Image (cartoon, rainbow, N blue to C red; front, side, top):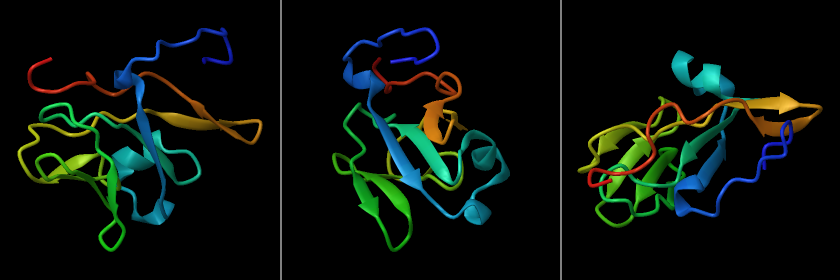
Length: 116
């Protein structure tokens, strides 16, 4: 729900997001501009075929889609590191309001996959 206007978003799986807290000093400049207190947000929908990006590879701090092994770097604007995904994971800009994490704007690009 958008707390400012009390708009409730649909329950569509396209609204699923991933939140990851990272060391702000390790974020790219573009990513840092969308983060709040080191927390970054991305769609959970893989840009390849729409599976859920659900795995976290802690050693490399990489998000992974288990369906076709696409890898995304949350420190660098959701960049595709490996796999068949054709584009970055759309980011969700965040901010801190009254000590709470809040959405600061719409996704940075279209959420979805090749066939959508």
